[in-house]
View 1 (cartoon, rainbow, N blue to C red):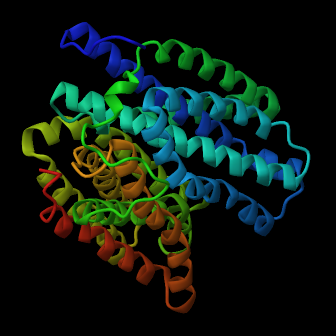
View 2 (view 1 turned 30 degrees about the vertical axis):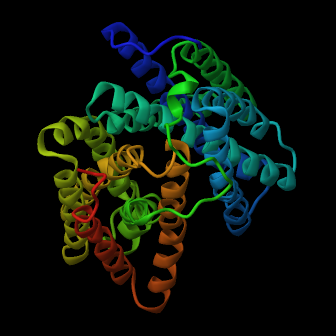
Length: 389
């Protein structure tokens, strides 16, 4: 899109909505897959252990693509890469519904992870540019749209399941909707020339993050350990520790997701008024205190309240960290985001296994205590970053 960057309100609004559309499409596609995991498990006759092993393919693909994605976004521009990444992400979704063997599913999920992360790095680079052009925090709202799309897509999935529509048809329906949105949004996304900073280092497959980016990565790590724990272990915690009735075992997860989504839409407003550093400090305290409440008072009402606090705490940390990452003077936005994402995502990967290992040798409550301590460290690290302020 060969246009000059101007300060018109209409132009900035178009950029904002275009980037928002890409976040929405990504959430729509991912949640469609997640909603049909049980059906695909039954279709391929997978055991619980077999499914767990197969599901590792997606995060492995995501992890493998982290340095490559940053290089590609910096080399070819975020506008081009977000279009290509989102388009093939949606197309790969349809392939998941057509697999007929476990090996095909593993390969397809790995590729799904590759395209997903390329889209993630590119769209966050676009969001950084839009945020800087507006001169205020808006990243949390973008991530909130990802969560909102997840809710909508999960609801569509539930309806399709009740109507006994197979995953293949479901995924094709979502992909067609996603591709239509992508084609429209691409016309208004941020121009490629805006994704490169003057004086930035030439792109390479991997660069060592400086001290500032390392701190941001560690803050993201603390938050994503907590987020991963909530995604994978909140239901188990309610079942085994809280001893909730069967129909209430997902209550903690629902509470967490509700406040995480709502918190993201409120996060930018609060950050613009209270400051990003203060919001991350408060977020770290909310994550830690929410888990502590659930540990000390393992009852349905108190544990649910604790998980509500955890959702609020998690909501804005990663979006604000990504927004701060884009202000790095040492690297292009794409390379800086890839470096910080790599560190942060390790927390998402090791959090759930860490909980399982500790729980095996002690208890689930002790596992959650470790997560609470790590989450609280985000507050301590926030004051040490110059890029967040």
